[in-house]
Length: 298
Image (cartoon, rainbow, N blue to C red; front, side, top):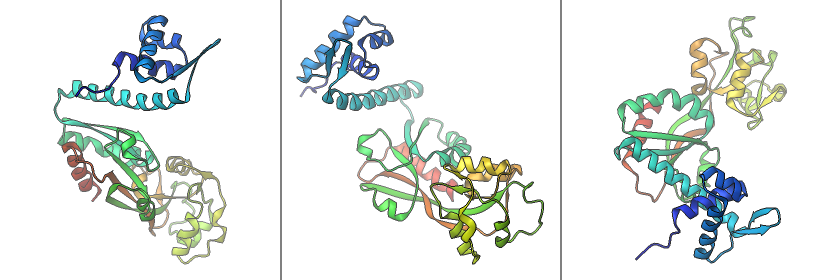
């Protein structure tokens, strides 16, 4: 049975026109005439039996149906282009993985280690996009996600399988210049310093001091930053002490730009997981990546 799929040229013209909200700009991008773009979109509308654009005195506007279709088509054209480039690059061998990942984990932990996976599996290419929240795999092209969360958050992500990679171990770190006043820092001494805050974890310092059995009532004040990378940079510049997962500041610790103030780690509620669709048949490349990832995480 033949598939009910429009011509690719018509979809290409529609996606470009929808993105630009202009036949003229779409024609320029695709090296076509405006009339050619208009004909392709008209043929697509006839094929669908649905009006995708409203023609106005000032140009064209997407209809509600056109807006929804454009969003779906754009994702599929991107996926088709990515699969084509992967096949061209690898001559059909190995395969490719499309990963969604919380950005700081990808930048600070995964990327420094990814070369070892490439050396083990040279025919597999790994693409990584930044993604911080759960999503429906069926609506995306992702094979897996690297996610940081609590067991409660994982329970609210249906239809997925979670592979635990590592727990989050939180430590207080600061610039050695800031710590020069003492040689032996104890948890209570940190209250003498500026305590930088993460805006998405406003209670982190209070939890750490509670675990250290120190009254941390005054620990909620200090400049707030959203991302771990911002906090790490602020600490390197001597702005204050920060609480960070040890694995995300390995480079700064190794270079001596940061120092653990006192070796009193706190296991956080969050952990890092590889998330995959529960029902999907895993491609070989994903199985290889999972095995490698578990090994380096251990």
